Image 1: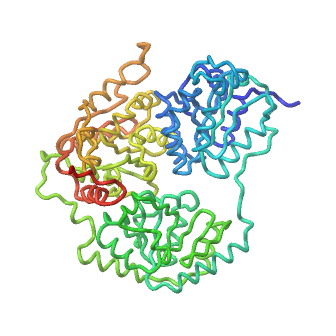
Image 2: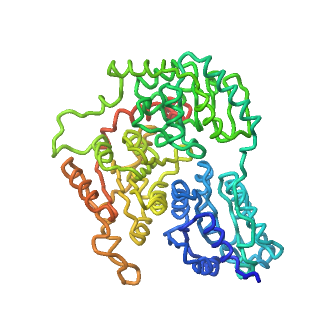
Image 3: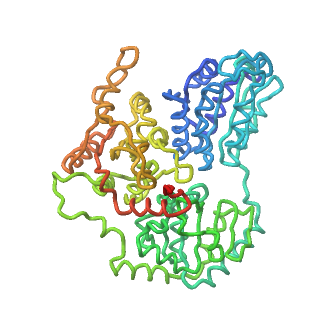
Length: 585
């Protein structure tokens, strides 16, 4: 005899089947019964967030690094769903599997009765689902005719397309009885492994492009993480012999300890030897590179470089002559190239090493002279200290702006990860996302780097991090405003209020709203850092107490940005990414 379950029980079973362990919630009256049902599953943990935007950012981080690569966020109708929308748009841009579960008005009110709270005051109540169609690959609003198969279809679309989905459940249908979900077919991702003919075609084209190249290079981007492991990329790199560079969002997809790894390629803010080597190459083998204007800084027109790009993506390969082979198992193609033995070509590696010998490599220009323990902290000092404490299985989460440059220069040990949001670039994303990363990867420690302006946008989630004993290291670069935007376009709107960030962190933990303490003493360590001596002491403390949340306010002179940041800002101003300020007539 089949057991029977309500909608929330069914969803909880599916989430558990998908290896989800935590789900992010902001309660609202339309989703309370649904959350009650989810809570009945002892193998799932509810994470209460301060607001829906932060909950969505946390789900983004969770989906990036969890073993399942799937996250769930539960919100209420309209006021909650539209608040989480921005975070889901960012998740869509990164091809993340985030399941949005929304509690909605009673089904009989969905096409009648305009006087329903959280609505627009009109009979049609479908605005939320329609809006989410723009940032999801599938959606459903449950009605009396829907079956578990309809929900399964949405979940399967999420898995197959690696994109967010939206599911809305009217409050009266949440108690609808479903059959035992264990009797349903398993949710599996479709496989392309049967496309053997396409595999052979891809091998021929790749082989021909490779043997015809004089000075090939390998470029690895952020999308590579969706279909190739670091070990496979490293084996491929070793087999072909050329120098390899990573884009910023692909930094952790390439082992920096590998002798062929040349570091970061970031257009004109690359180290000189890197940029020259890439520009002189006649074949770019790009793996998971999704170029945007922040990659190229408009000083590199990728559309004009197609004739030398062999683009390897998750299920397709595009050759320099414009031919595209679709529906291929990319991992199988890479494995076959390794096994068949592409003739190694180390011309680009030798050229790059010569540039290094000529002192064009980056690290030399980042050593400030004459510093001592009482010297003011610089971004370079922060990079050095993070590099000294980061370990295997740790994750760096870098917010938009100057944090990108700090993270780009941290040398990652094998097994460490870097997460950015370079395409969507939503300021403030990093703090809640780091919480999601830490919850999903508890065997390592998350280090989040963000500016003071970013912190002010999403700082409420420090409260949630303390509540669930998230032991991240939060590095706040306090440079008194939106400094990267100030370089692009000066104006009073780039100035923000000054906060005592270290004091704020210390104030949060003392007690909950009920007056009952939920936290152990010393659940948070916070410090305001102005000198190198204070910086060293703070990172030492954070290392000695690895289970404690650390909030480090690093005060940086806004008048002394790093040289790389200055170049970045100038390139944005002198390009069509950002229009130059109008000159008064």
